[in-house]
Length: 132
Length: 335
Image 1 (cartoon, rainbow over the protein chains, first blue to last red):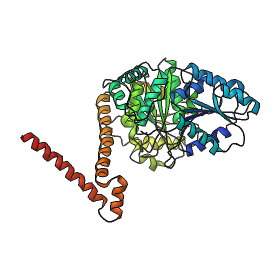
Image 2 (cartoon, rainbow over the protein chains, first blue to last red; image 1 turned 180 degrees about the vertical axis):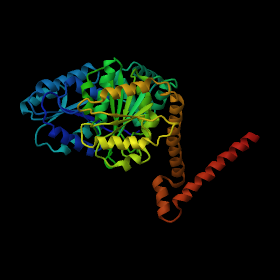
Image 3 (spheres, helix red, strand yellow; image 1 turned 45 degrees about the vertical axis):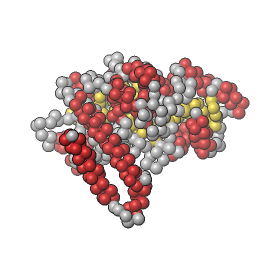
Image 4 (cartoon, rainbow over the protein chains, first blue to last red; image 1 turned 30 degrees about the horizontal axis):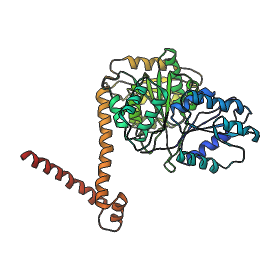
């Protein structure tokens, strides 16, 4: 069976800074994954629905605007509601250290802050995929 | 929903429940079935077998053309159109997989995300996974799945293509070829291949310079279409400004409702699927026979490199093998 890691990279909310999201999407592509890129200014609903239709293993959210404390948990809540809580969530962007514990509690397996090497994200995904 | 083990057959009850998910268009189960089909899960044949309906009435539309021509944007506008008529729309969007990493950036959704919150629209992206021809190896079967759900029409968007990728025309009832100005002179439109498969030729980006030359060249190339074949409609439009979109939707609609379109659907699909199965199973069988004799495919390659045989001699082995089967057959008939 030809199984590939499928992953959705999305930007919820009004933040249009997508350099980081595109960089990660490209790095994951080069690591052999199928990356569904949904572009900027997505509602949590649109991200959750797309993730389900695409049957992804992971969702990576990127946000630089400061609205992560609302938008990230909202995606987690919608996945739960739609019976898709098994999709592994991670986030990245400008996220203060003190916000990370609450996001993890909301269901985010990892939060990557500025300066993270792409290889670190790839390792995280591959480890989670193998143990999942 | 629980994860599916990649190499273990599903229980009959699990297969039944997935079939209900597909028929009732439940997104999670439908998406899982599409993954099983795409990944060649051992139970996917049973699911496809149960869903297969030769008398399918759902119409399918292929959208093809070079990269950046506006295929996804036009698909998005077509979804808009059918949603206003309250029809549920399915989309399969194929993008290329890397020949090196096997990874893919599936970006067609970006142009269609306005429909992501609409339960009447189901969009699935697929990597081409090494398949040439503008689709992926599993697109044909994925289309069987999506047309078994309640989506009608279902669109298939190919990877950005060049000249020879005509496969989409064989899986879809009608095919739209999207062209844009500035990709070459008249000689390009004279070439065989992709110019011959379209039912509608969309001249997109009509707001760009060069559109007149493109239209002239396309029309000139169609002068040679003989009387037996239906001449494709040529429609100038701009997905950006909305110019010509009404002409496009009405052309597509009138084609879809014409009696000729989809008439050969059952025979065409059955032929296509069977040919696909012959290719896949034939190749599996050949690999098995070679591996049996040489240990593995690499073992066969090593034998060639060490001068013991040539690839052609390995091929000849099959002639003998098939004759062996025929003799056996004849022998058993005489008994």
